[in-house]
Image 1 (spheres, rainbow, N blue to C red):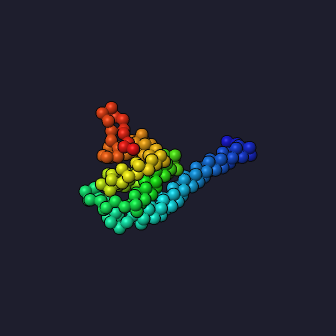
Image 2: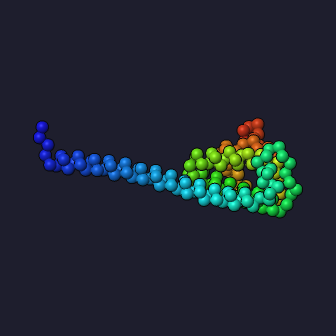
Image 3: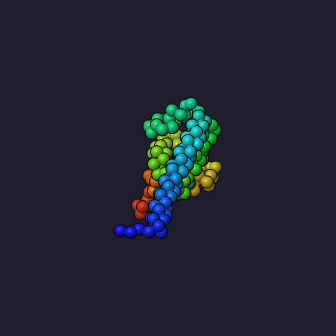
Length: 167
């Protein structure tokens, strides 16, 4: 079998092209993972800041589904507003494809639990009075995506499968 120089060049070009394509794909995946890690780190810092803004007595019952919330205060309402704002931003990032599904699932589970707490249910009534369109629209998007359903007092489903946000 006699292979000429042009055949070697063609095969070499093909191999180089395949290697370059694989390298590009791997590079994009690595970049995407790094960006998800960066977003995770940044939002974890923001989450820590939001949590530290909760008054001490509210921190204890924020995730407690049976505990009695502390007396209402402006500080608690502000902290809940900061929390919901952070959650709406996280949802937006996930919904637009800037955040991996795995990271969103971690945050979503905690969001669902928090929204079911007596503290958040009480504060939701206070926040409704503020007419916060950004947070409300983000929560509506959450409902439409069926990520968060049947959170009594805030979100519920109707007999026909539609969702209602108590705003």
